[in-house]
Length: 137
Image: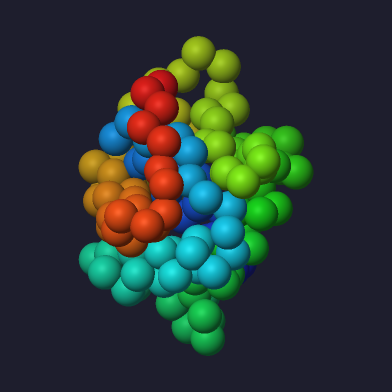
């Protein structure tokens, strides 16, 4: 069985891949807004049961946000979240890789499932009051 940290890393890398695949690579870094959106996405994602150590956490959104905030320090990541001003910017760290190609390096889940998580997340982080940039990758 994998550790909670490994599960969090896979989910936040997968979420970043899903975001890049749908064309959005930048979101607010506001802690409250981010945790709210992560909690919403997590509770609505059909595959959350595959990550039991996150699922059992008292606040899964907090666990995932902490993983995002520590992501830029990881050196062996396929996807990192970098803080830039008031934003987190998703960066596919594998040189010259599309989200489809990078997905092979993030667990065994297909990109389509990460895109579903990303759509849930982006729908909650941008209900009209939190800016999201549509930066194409």
